[in-house]
Length: 178
Image 1 (cartoon, one colour):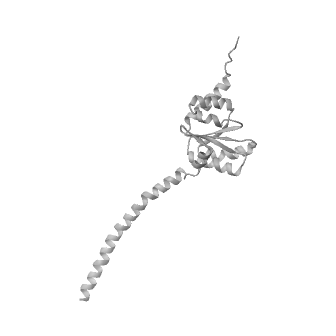
Image 2 (cartoon, one colour; image 1 turned 120 degrees about the vertical axis):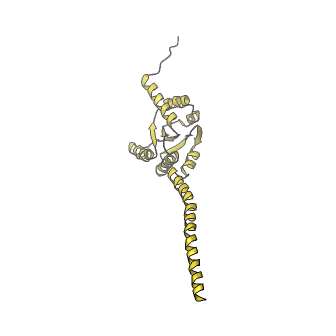
Image 3 (tube, rainbow, N blue to C red; image 1 turned 90 degrees about the vertical axis):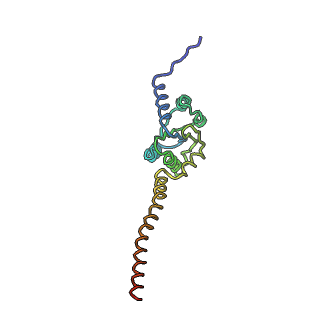
């Protein structure tokens, strides 16, 4: 005779929390934090928070259930060993940059992969995402691209009356000399 065990309410709540975070995120990154101190984890969370990301540690079994429930099965392969999830609701490039920068300065932080929207990512994909210009840089480039033709047009429009005045002045001087 087998008895089916019902999941504990606290574990069900955690799975629901993870599922909600997965569904609300534009990107999720998985990293390994084996050997990191509490202080190092706190140092990691600060730049991530600035990029609109949250770095949390969950039990892998609960995270796997939430990943399955949210339809992001590609993340399951990364949920081995001491893993943390970085949920990105803001700038995914900025969050990837912050995570990669922290991994460069702290060899104990290992990026395993993640997902961008519904697309699974490898660790190399996360590093490639981090190498892209940030949203602010792209907006600045776009503004510069819009501004350049306007500046050129303004210069041409200023030159037209100025050149006309020089030409008129030269004609008057020529008439006076004759």
